[in-house]
Amino acid sequence: MIMAILTQAPRGTEDILPEESVQWQVLEEVMRGEASLHGFGEIRTPVFEHTELFQRSVGDTTDVVQKEMYTFLDKGGRSITLRPEGTAGAARAMLEHGVYNGGLPVKFYYFTSCYRYEKAQKGRLREFHQFGAEMYGSAAPLADAEVILMARSIFDRTGLSGVSLELNSIGCPECRAKYTEALKAYFGEHREELCSTCLDRLDRNPMRILDCKSPECGRVAAGAPRMLDYLCDDCKAHFESVKEALTAAGVEYTVNPSIVRGLDYYTRTVFEFVCELDGKPITVCGGGRYDGLIEELGGQPMPALGFALGMERLLLLLRQQNIELPSEEPCELFIASLGAPAKMAAFRLCDTLWKSGVKAACDVNDRGLKAQMKYADKIGAKYSIVLGDDELAAGKADMKNMETGEKKKISLGENFLDDFLTITTMDEDLSF
Ligand code: HAM
Image (cartoon, rainbow, N blue to C red; front, side, top):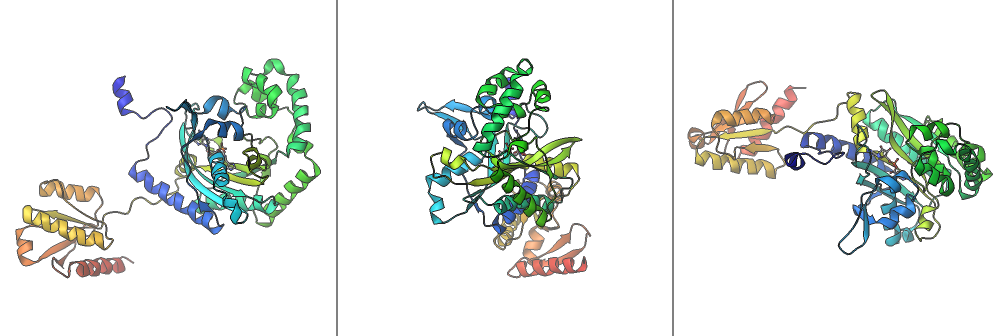
């Protein structure tokens, strides 16, 4: 048992090994590119925050706060929580540094690890990663359309297909108050069917019953009144304009009145990008407006909105659809050596290549020639050189193209880099 603890990562966590990291980097590049096109700058916030920040923003009747947070007292007796999501920390940082003084809207993007104590399964982890984008200081429907467009464009750029956009509006505090009354009346009649957590939510925040994961509550929730029927005129007009802007930009969507999102800060537009994983729908990206959050955290009233996309889920979906993401660039040249002087020469030649930005390797382990060449194969070296006393005396060696077996002379002196570049460029030209 103790051995398993030492050699197995905790449940719901995953190691990302080098081969996979390259795919993460490719996706991160796509996301950074898209964020930069829209003027979003990267923000990096702490992995942990004061627990109150999440209680206030995510909401203390949500599953995330009630059941899933990694919360502990630090040695100073403060209650600390590992971030379950990125929006709260980004908003806190925006307020703390007064970034909005330079003009609005302020736009942040981030890559963060998040922590939720959930039932671990495929696509549902306890440590997972999000790419997120947040915009502060615009109440305009075009801002909603722009962030939705960004997420859409990221999916398009990755080549993922079958991702549908589902849209809803959950109104503002005014129209929500009437809706909450309607929900209280409805769920009040189904009291006996609700789980104990939802009984507590019935008085405090009945909307949360709508996204309870228990199947019984889900069945009751299916017949509940819908927010769209309670929207005030302003919220209705806002939603219409968002849809109009999306249509103008050619973004397809469906209105799904049952989307309420699992976090309390949302107002008005909420949306999810959904795709099928193993035949079941999975939300790969979610977001919306949160016009009341900044004030709730102590700032001036400021509309805001954003989304977060789950990196692990995106990768699972891309793999399921056999979408090739580049793997690590192979090593250009492996320099094998026989004897101490050759070994040192190989190391110096590699250094020349490294300084010029060429990916190269030599033996550092005192292995025999056979083992060295096996290693060259394993790392996928495109070319190899074997250095021994004869080559050092002649100042020249054979550079072998590992794919074709063809050998060409390469100088080991001053012209080494030039010869290397000439040979590799000629081979590249021939392969076209
Ligand atoms: P969320 O819907 O809780 O929203 O999470 C966003 C995305 O993170 C999900 O769509 C999913 O892809 C991924 N995700 C969530 N939980 C897990 C998990 N346990 N394992 C793997 N992936 C997961 C938020 O976090 C909001 N902060 C989004 C936002 C930003 N809204 C406005 N701005």
